[in-house]
Length: 198
Image 1: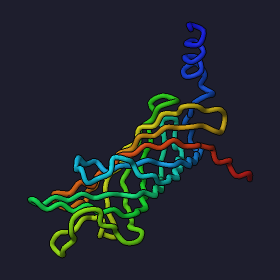
Image 2 (image 1 turned 60 degrees about the horizontal axis):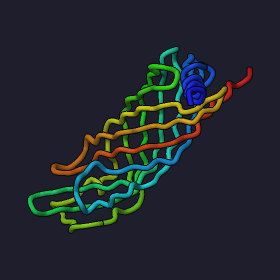
Image 3 (image 1 turned 180 degrees about the vertical axis):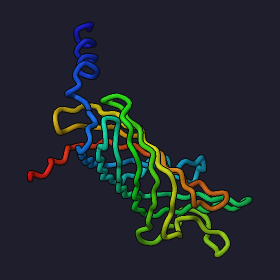
Image 4 (image 1 turned 90 degrees about the vertical axis):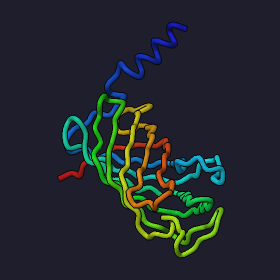
């Protein structure tokens, strides 16, 4: 048992070749499925998370981190309450994030970004009734907010890696009495983009 523990600890912490080393000019791309849920306690929302997809590009600017741009395709649920009325709607959205990722260690990093999201198709009413004076943000074409991420590189070697990423999106354009924040988790394949030869 001690031998197995030593192997695990050595592989996770002992080799810097198995981790992201930020260096100015390096560009990395990540593709991943993402499971997401709206942060709400309302019983009308299903417990199962919705699945989406993510594509993220990270460009190192120095030895600490770099600029990160992401594209996230999500099924998002909005829950709005006003007195005894409750309206729950779902819509597909494309999120575009732009921010900065900082590496605290070669295997763990955090990012903060701003996002804009764009509706795709028509909203679906899950529960309640839509009226002119009672709608959710699902009916807005564009939504804005902040996005936070905590990422752990599970495995990496050379130009490839597998990452786990926990994310939280805070909506700035929600309606009053509405749950519109989203949290999610992705498990992605990360690859370094080769430099162009001159």
